[in-house]
Image (cartoon, rainbow, N blue to C red; front, side):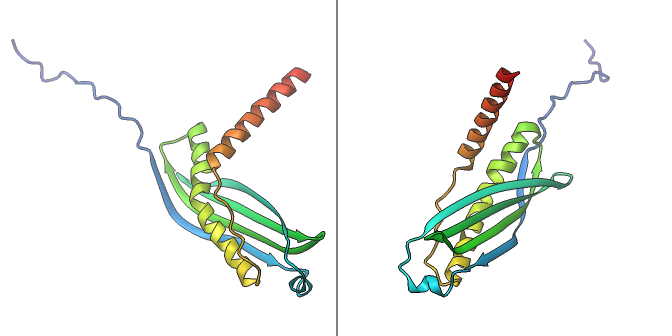
Length: 164
């Protein structure tokens, strides 16, 4: 029996290569204000800390994205702002082989998880240079934050559907 040399063997299709890389991490913006100084140093320090965090991302080109994590701490005492610190910790990331919800998860969970320790350190450094006690921010589970935001979107959509 003769073999047919012209027979084409089907090549199994390989899934697209998935790759994640950090190209650069940097501070995009930072500010520190202490409007109640020096008076605040002359009173007992019993602050109320209001902390907020959010992130945004934008596609730069190809598979490259900039993600910016904004950390803000507004510290008050007796209805006076003791200090206000804001850091925009940013990074440039390469994300290959992902799209849709998987890409969204990387940009809203993985990238902020990489950036947060840098932003936390920058906030702490600004606060201590302002001569205040260290402001050590607790770790954040960005996956839990993402999942809660998704649940809120579903609930909001369901509520809007019930109103129509």
